[in-house]
Image 1: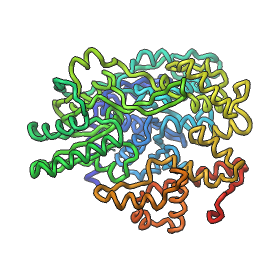
Image 2 (image 1 turned 180 degrees about the horizontal axis):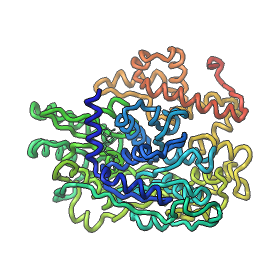
Image 3 (image 1 turned 60 degrees about the vertical axis):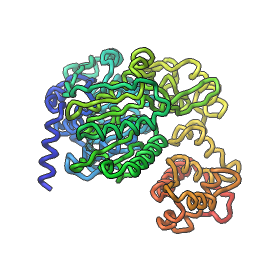
Image 4 (image 1 turned 60 degrees about the horizontal axis):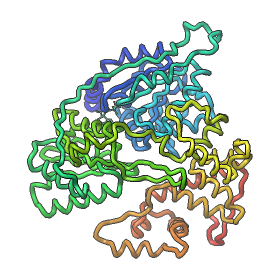
Length: 572
Ligand code: ADP
């Protein structure tokens, strides 16, 4: 409708970044790299790609790319931009995340993607020739893929000086990024240097209009931050004027537990609290629930969003006036001695705490309730987080660089150098898996094939070895199940029925064979959603499994690998 469109247009013009439209376009024209620093919610992710398109950067079939560290952010930002531009998602505005492609090669002008997917695209097109501009968003998060991508893009720029980069960040120490990208052009005989952009990066700061946020601390350390978060939400609802509440917790399990606790309290407390609209926000959230997050709150209601740190800087929720900060997030952590990488709940840094508090000052002065003491904040909290590169298993990262022809891994231009222990450990693992040879080169064909399969290298290797045991068909199914979140739907209050459903598929050999039983049942039901419903299985997740399996099958067929099954009933 014309009405909706006009008001979206007005919203676009109200964003802080709008005033910098001309400046941004000018800098991108003149400089190979432009660093845009601006507060979360100032409009960087949604607006800059549109400005570039309007200025002609997508003309002639070229692409404007915008990367995000998180899959959910890719989907949400892309759908917002499609809506603002009044186009159907997947046409002029598209996105690609692993195993999911919503784009149209002839039509797409703006493409959102995860940094990992862009790195994979380099295997086919090492200089990313389809792109005229690439915006690397959320660079301050220092995710491992972002860091690798920055190193690779720097290499590409030496060969393709006309490629424009925009590095966008909420907090970056802009100067260090600027030093990193200050590339000396080697061969200026490539063309008259007037045609080429300046290699020295430009830095632009977008002034936000954040309001002040009053910070409150707990007096004594809390022993149970979930219960403390729930109590704080109820207290805010009781004492404070209207305004939505954003609660930072750590992950899906935490959030589901808090939603349950809140609902129980509300039942117990009665009428006044029924005005609370409680919404979870984490990756893997179904489409419909994603949309609810952004829907404006109806009059007399108060929205409570319980989120992982995705709402810290990746997504902005309008209308938030109160923030409750647990002080924790889920973080990747790696021990090179045991070679174990895990997600652990760990304290956040001061920088994160400040970002979280800032979310309360979007629409008017707000309040942030920190569930830790002021003493702890001042004296014990780390000031910055550690880049993911320095707390990750490097196996995948090394395979990707090798596949891109970067042999001297130690000499690679890392924005943050990984630890030598982690590096050595990864090389040992890769050698023992037969992915690298004695000269640390990818083996033929195993090493190259592992690089091509978009899964954890251990799982890729498992698929490639499965035919020696006559079960590649089953292993492919198991690998596909391992690539989706969970296939179960747990419905509260019917625990007995749920456990019975689980038992129907259970196998003495463990979860992996359970997956095979579920897959078989789903096929025999004719992929019926009814059947899923009856068995407490998530229909969307199972369709995803089938889809991922199809994609993996195409890849291994491409290697000339025949599929062998060890189950005579299962020739599908
Ligand atoms: P930045 O990248 O600077 O953090 P964004 O471009 O992500 O800023 O956000 C700009 C504005 O667009 C914010 O006010 C945000 O609330 C709004 N917005 C972003 N995504 C969506 C969405 N999917 N639905 C509704 N509003 C959105």
